[in-house]
Length: 116
Length: 109
Image (cartoon, rainbow over all chains, first blue to last red):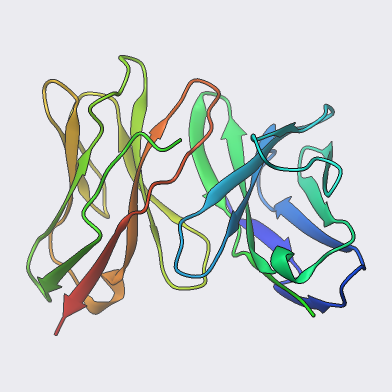
């Protein structure tokens, strides 16, 4: 149980285009999802907290207009990187919390974004 | 910001116990300690968590000091597949995880 998927697993896009990454909880409902980014050989950096049906809460220094987050249902959150640039190239990882008193985060397998 | 510090790397012989330390001296009374591990280019995997009592599951044991300022993750019989980066995380009030730099564990045959 507690499986989280991400799609796509890898994406290459041209500079200036937008890319959408999906995060799905496959066998549970997630009231809260989180988005992280990870640069090579570095740790995960929390970008934002996404609660179903409400606006995401962004960490300091993360541009909300560049990284659009939508959490339209209890099993799906999306991250859209708008007007992507090469410096946005990174490993993007989502996680989901089952709720009901459980606070473990279950992580997706990650999405490798390369902006050329 | 991460509230934990860990050694950057450790080695462990296959079949032996791996003891991974973590300092969290500023932890508050109601903040839990979580351990995750990340194998290269994958999402982190949950291992164990605790508040103040020692915990054990099928993967590992977690020993938390009485003053809660540090903890140790124990993998009782390390295998080559346990080679990974291990993160000790303090869950803050809003349920966010702020990852520190973690410990890169290498299990040696």
